[in-house]
Length: 295
Ligand SMILES: NC(=O)C1=CN([C@@H]2O[C@H](COP(=O)(O)OP(=O)(O)OC[C@H]3O[C@@H](n4cnc5c(N)ncnc54)[C@H](OP(=O)(O)O)[C@@H]3O)[C@@H](O)[C@H]2O)C=CC1
Ligand SMILES: CC(C)(CO)C(=O)C(=O)O
Image (tube, rainbow, N blue to C red):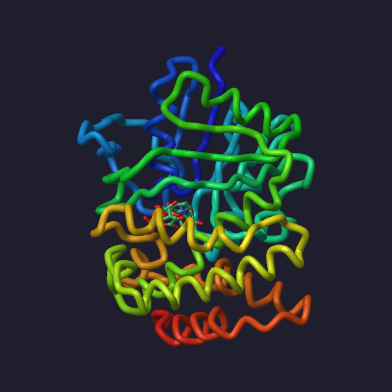
């Protein structure tokens, strides 16, 4: 009997992971989309394309047979719009994995999913969406989950796939480390410029300052991040594809709402809890919020 997985939000992350999971014959993957599409096409880092046509559902209803797993891979700001789906799909056996950036996965879904059925996932997977169902994976897919029974069951789903999934005994540090990578992406979104701007020394210095604020706040929250992390991240950003675009910047380019509250906003909130000033992240939040599309 196959393991049934539903992926809510088949965008850059949800769609790429769906394609990679479909390489396993014993998994049955359904997509839950807001904007429907007929086929999934994922260009991989080596240029090859994974094509498939999984079922795409668009209207919430309770399935005849419960899903074993539901992945939520929408932007953080779309969490409340997922509620009708979670209400329809949640069963006592269903595990819910939240694949989003930021550090507030549990808080964001506390009202929607019983804590014992919720698994936060750290996603490190550079991917871009060019049209509904049409995705480009830019680099390796790496996921990290807490070291508990849910985390171990999640790791097992990806056995024999091209996804690097592991549990971590220090998941708090894992999440904050990822937020340290994401926070300077606000500069790309503000300037509407891709990865290559990190080659400019003044921009790199600004990004470094943003990251050092995150590291200070992270450590106050109980994470264990070394300040040298900022320079390591800068070095890896310099090696990344010069035309690569982070997902916050992709949202700005597409005229969509930007995920600034879950990223730099989370840094500012945590800083306030500890009395730690975060002027650079605060400025990023203020400017990006002013740039948000009017609804
Ligand atoms: N892209 C990247 O490189 C990375 C992204 N992340 C994180 O992963 C998360 C997802 O990002 P990403 O994949 O880039 O986002 P995308 O915008 O590419 O995809 C989000 C998808 O969710 C869909 N969606 C929104 N609301 C609903 C709903 N109520 N029901 C069904 N589908 C819905 C959107 O539909 P529609 O087509 O209508 O907009 C879209 O297809 C974010 O938290 C992001 O920060 C983490 C690491 C890397
Ligand atoms: C760091 C990066 C670019 C890929 O993992 C990301 O998290 C994003 O685009 O949101």
